[in-house]
Length: 115
Image (cartoon, rainbow, N blue to C red; front, side, top):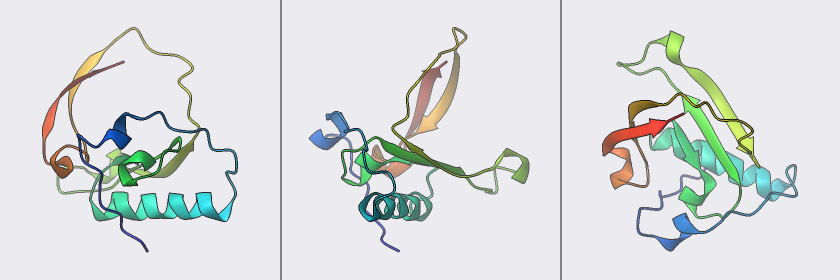
């Protein structure tokens, strides 16, 4: 298990375009995914992009775990997304409060408009 420090806002790495992953089943890619999953759990986040641990690849993970404020019905297993692409977007939008591990290590929340 390798826990990576979360890259924080202001680091130019977070603004760079990520690269397409060509060798999905390679040991190097699998190690990055394991490090990302370990880091998202350690930092108690619900999702994290690989750029937040220092790599410029199109990979992110989500895992919604049970907490005192979240019951088991609202949880979801670890999901790994490699080379994701938005194929459609709802015209309806909602505003919800979200945090980000790269902004004060996820302790800062604010309203975000999402489709």
